[in-house]
Amino acid sequence: MPTSHAPAPPKSSVCPACAAGLVIHERYPTWCPDCEWNLLPVEAPAADLTARQRRAAERQWEAQADRLALARLRAEQVYDAVAAGAGAREDRTWIGAMALAGVVHLVTVGLLAGSVALQFVDSWPLRVVGWLGLALAFVLRPRAGKVPEDSGVLRRTAAPALYALVDRVAAAVGTRPVDVIRVTDEFNASFARVGLRRRSVLTLGLPLWEPLGPGQRLALLGHELGHDVNGDHRSGRWLGSAISTLSEWWYITQPVRYDDRDGSMTNSVMEIADLGQRLAGLAMGCVNWLVGLLLGLLERLTTRSGQGAEYRADAIAARLASTSEAEGLLRMLLLAGSASTVRSRLRSLSGVRQSGLSVGVAGFWDAFTAELASVPPQETERLLRLSVRELSSVDSTHPPTHLRIRMLGHRPVPAPALVVTPEEAAAIEAELAPLRLRIARELLA
Image (cartoon, rainbow, N blue to C red):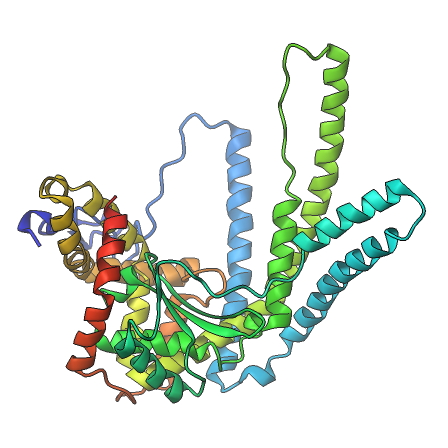
């Protein structure tokens, strides 16, 4: 990577809060490890805020602090339970979620049955209502998903070495081999079962895969395939389809305001249209609020089970690749924001564009990996401490990252159960080469 792209040497300074020495990196926030000054840089409040606006902002901050305290309490309760050895069977919070999922499915079945019954009524307006109900029931039907068929899908014949490694991980985890491996341009990875046949799909985001070492890649595979055996009820057909159905309801019932006035409409017509629009928006808003309430309740009921499942998937990753490699994976996941910044920087570099797209594409992943490797340890530590303060995590369904790292240290695994040989790594690299070029070209476009 060109030296002109490397981060500038850090400069020393003094913390304005505790006078401790600071290390300044031009590309990253300056903060104090001693007193955590500027741990989360925020903009100063506008000086021209009225007293009423300041009071509203203070109330909003207090409400956010209360929600954070409650979330911290729940997260620590899940941590304590899993650390004490509680498994998926000991957690009973998901039972309420299964019952609520049954209500969701009954509503869909009731809508379908009622709409079918209306077709036998001797009234054409009711039959029209029935047809509308059938269309709505079709839209709200539970979805099992489907096997992707996009250009990122790798078949076994095209990637035998990668599939062989994933099969080894599946056998060590205790699940059956995956059916499909898909490679994307996301800084993420996932595992899911889709379709009526519940075929397994492993999705690997190349921006996450590339910067990882062989052991961390094993940890990633172990974690994702571990979701098939870690007791995560959200991934089941009954509960998972209810969540997707409620999400569809919430999307459909969002009120939309139309402002389609033209000179051909009289004032009285516009007033009637406005009234009808307000009433329709109010009705849809109420339905949307109720659906959102149910979706939030379902999320609350599955949070404990879901976070426990993430801890157990992390334990599987550590067992396969060792605790240090699993922790390295989690620390890499902290850099999702940095990865996005790096992608944008490489896209905008004039040197990459002037040297020709093919050359830029060929060197993209080396540059991307080098940039992430150059993130200073102090920035990773800042993100980790933010996880402690703000309960930040990969997403809302995961436990805070600092608790996941602490859990790994609760039962350390010093030696890996599996090892990727240099020959395997080279074969997998060759199989991914076409996708590496295509995805790099898309990210630079």
